[in-house]
Length: 428
Image 1: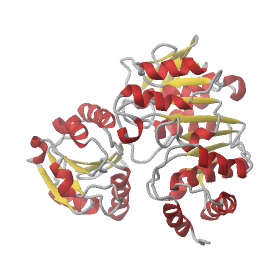
Image 2: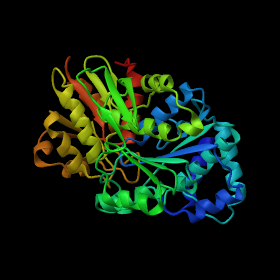
Image 3: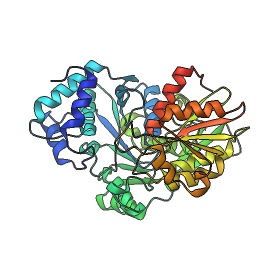
């Protein structure tokens, strides 16, 4: 039996022959053997292509500000596995996670679980023991067949639908939207955070009888001339709100979806406008346009698909660097590299490509990554063994007024935050 958390995580990666194995039968049976514990009296699940983690952060902060005891499950982590499971704002300890894994191992017997399924079951088990008011669960991949979907949530949010993980979810927004809509339940709020969702998502929500609430139709973000304020409007209510600390333009849409979920659940959770305002400014999540001051400035972002890259490009267009922009970029082999780089090409002067082959079996080495770049970017790209080497090179080349942008994967973001700690860079 493994003894340390690191041993347990290593063990989990060997139990199932594949890292990803979509389907609910195996994980649901182990959950049943655990007693199918309800994680909390109220559960919200959050799926979508991008914006899931930020929406979890908004909900967690708003509910905590209202005095609720909240559990939040997210993935992947940046620096420590413990980040994935939080209770009342605190990461789960090693001993708590090990205890949950031991309990799972004691009942799973012949059933093979993936690394993600172990983590999901551990989170549900720990939340059930924690006396929560609300559990907020981030969907890992897709929705319909994701392990989180064994729980019948009281409300579900789909933030955005775009192309990513096509090998698993389909090659068009319609197919992907259908998979993500699988977290909706009949008679329960189904919040959609974008104004133009695919028809498949809307049709599935109607088919199952969900209480569908779509941004731009049932609730709205109103952006005025005041850069410090915005308005949420829905069902006869208008809230004048401060801008969130999370910087990207899309964060208003994520915050609006979170507020729409709270509004839909107000009969069970109450409606606390002061807590919503407080949560907006207190919500934090790492590596989402996270800025570190100095000469040069470093910006860390997890943008790892074309939609996220377009959001990043929008922010860069509105906040250009005084000097050059140097991009430290790494990617996994199943990503649309041309789509990501194409979205940002007009905002980047030099590409420093970081190998991720040491971080993940799916990671591209820098030479293979360079071969996938459009010709214009390829001419301005250099290859580096890993993220640390690329960041060292970027900082050696950068001058005061330049900006180094580290993005493309959670592996890139994690290595960049480790670089920040080594260099003792201060938050901007």
